[in-house]
Image 1: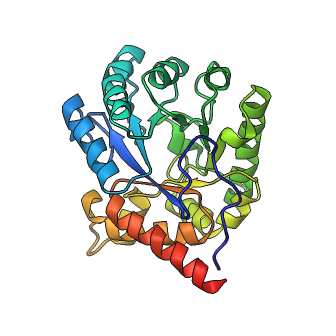
Image 2 (image 1 turned 45 degrees about the vertical axis):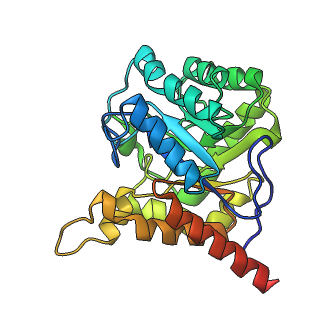
Length: 285
């Protein structure tokens, strides 16, 4: 059954449906498209393409968070994201910056980013929460247990849904204590981050429990390994670039389950998906 989103994030788009966030990875090593948009001109062109395809937000990141990825230096991350954020923002794109570093968040917002998407939920950099509070922009708080090189060793839970909910609540409380406004907070269960495929499916099947936190919920399942495993044939995992249909199916179900936003690589298919979910919900009322 469809669950209406409980709220919205102040300062970001408010269409009458689940939002669609398009991904621009300005990295050489992201799991889906590492290297494809690494040059600033290519990344900018892709961001404009995503906006033209209907993305409500474009999420620009300069650090790969795939399992095992090594971190770039702060300078390298800044050099990757700032030209892209600046150009896209000047051209009317609503940009969020995907970073775990306060310095990058501050410089990206100064360059035009409208929100900070921190996959560590403010845990990786002790200065992040205070920095975002000072910037007075939205923060996406993701569930996280450690950096890419060690996170899968931490995929142990008593009960994944209740554990993730409790750990997200603690990070939200920390954000509020740092001065971030409640209407500026969204939460993300962090599919694939210190989680097995079974953990991911369990979280997706119980989005309602995560909505009980009382904050808008973003779901980032697009092209992830657990989808490739599900679609495997003859022992061969489905290739990353052949997972968009299944990703869009998850977007439909997430939107129907009350998600505020889906974070995806292929915008057109997920935009269609969330429109279907929205229209279905209206017909049911």
